Every structure is written in structure tokens, then in C-alpha cells.
Amino acid sequence: MIEVNNISVFYNKFKALNNISFKLSKGQNLSIIGPNGCGKTTLLKCITNNIDFDGNIYIDNENISKIKRKNLAKKVGMLSQLMSISFNYSVFDTVMMGRYAHQDSFLINNNKKDIDIVINSLKTVDLLSLKDRNISNLSGGQLQRVFLARLIAQNPDIILLDEPTNHLDFKYQIELIQFLKDWSKKENKTIIGVIHDINLAMLLTDNIMVLQNGNIKYFDTSNNILKSNILNEVYNINIKDYMLNSLKKWENI
Image (cartoon, rainbow, N blue to C red; front, top):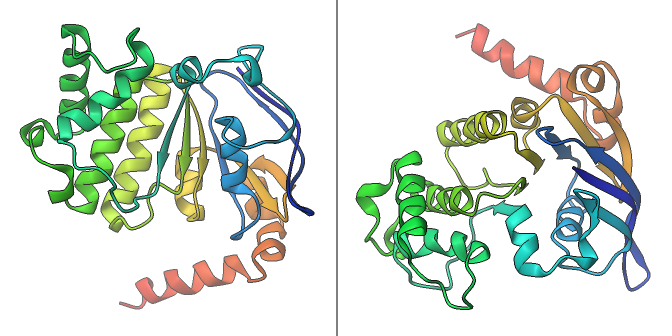
């Protein structure tokens, strides 16, 4: 489904990614973890073809460099962390933007099919009652659900996550990742998720890639990664001791 072959990225003389290669089948998910600046987001930008890179990326055996941007948006969608909003659209209009890749016109045409898809997407995230509200008047959790609904309306085969749980409360972090995992399984979609929280990364999938300094340091199941000392090396902290100490505090309550 997606094949990444020897991807390297240079920012002037700095090598942000170094010969990254991996394959994922349709419906297979991957969590990418690693310290800040290790190249996680840069890798996602390569998959969306938003930056220059050396190497090749294939989706359904087609090189993404040959895919028109609108057609690529039918195949790949992104859910990012919350940032400041630069437009004042309604909830409905924001979700309708997800249908742009599927329309023939340059301007978004609210035909019945797309309206129905948007309505159903809003129902899925329990936001239909807010469809006419301006997105600038939403809470952080509500706003991320709007962007999730837009992604559902876009309906890509491959979903990229760029730390989508940042700035969300603990409950919604878990709900969001669980929803994406269930959606992937039900619709046979592929998720590639950059997630800081190791527990959430393992909730999403058992396939974990550890990046360090632009290199794949480890690529294995979560169990094998936890058994190794790789996380201690990459994060320069004893992850196991940290988590066990946290659990002991709960046990002592």
C-alpha cells in the first residue's frame, strides 16, 4: 500500500532524515516515536509531498511525485495538533473542506452527496448540533473533533497523525486514539502516527518505529521494544523505572 524507499532530507547541510525505508500493507498501522527534532514530522511532510526529499515514496505502486496534489488528497489525509485558527468558518463549512479532493470544480460545490457525507461525519463525532457555530467559538476538544470530522469526510486510505493529542485533556486523548484505531480496523485504513506519549503510541498499534537523529533506531513490536533498552538510550532516561514509580504512587493511595 505504501512503500518508503531510502528517503533522505537535507536542510542546508543538516541531514534531517537519513535513508528511511519501510513498507506498510493496507490496514496496517504504525506509531513513530522519538525525541524532539529526530525527524518524525519531516517524514510525514515527505509522505504528503510537501517538502523536497531524496528517494521515492509509492502509494499503491504509484510514485507520489507523479500524483497530482488533488488526487493525492484522496489517498492521504492529515490530523495535526491544535494550532491557532486563521479562518472563521462554520463547523459545517470546515468539514465540507474535506470533500474538495472528491469534487470536479475548483470551488467547493455543496451537492447532496457531499452534504450527506458531512452530516454523517458530524454525527460520528457528535457535533451535528454545532454545525452552524463558528469554529473560533469552540473549545480545544470540540475543535479537534471538527478536524477529525473533516478527515472522515475526506475519507483517505492513509491517515497521518502529527501529535493530534497535544493540548487535549487526558480523557479525549484516549478517546481520539481509540476512535482512530477502531476506524482503521473497520474501514481497512492505514495510519502512520507521530505520537509523543508512548502509551498512546502502543494503544494505536503494536508496530513501533523509533527515530533518533534522522535514523531508524529500532522498528519492532511494542513488546520487543519495551524488553530492550532502546527507549532508555533514545530518551536518555530509564523509562521503565519512571513508569513503575508512577504506578507505585497509585498503589500507595
